Image 1 (cartoon, rainbow, N blue to C red):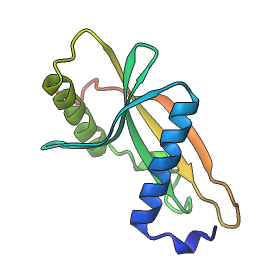
Image 2: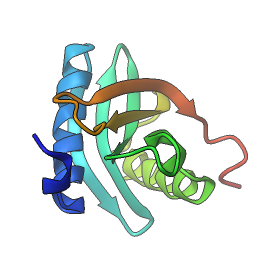
Image 3: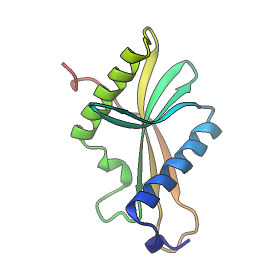
Length: 130
């Protein structure tokens, strides 16, 4: 696969599909994909060994601006946390551990397979929501 053939939407969809496979391979049960609220979107919500995981997927074709996971900025984390709280409230989920994971996918020039990394507990809600 040639990297230049992927437009941003295709790259995003491909990254999220790969992330879903990696999560399943690691024992996660996918609960919801592309959950949207008035606060933002969460790419994947999954269940992992008694914990609800809110997963942000970042896919890049180069490291010109650093590794993909660096694109999960403070503002992006804030939107994810608020969206996660919305998901928990709407679904009446209480007394369940939660965490925020990131799946980082990088397609390097000339490589046929991307580098994929699952970062469990990549960030916390501490200090984000008052």
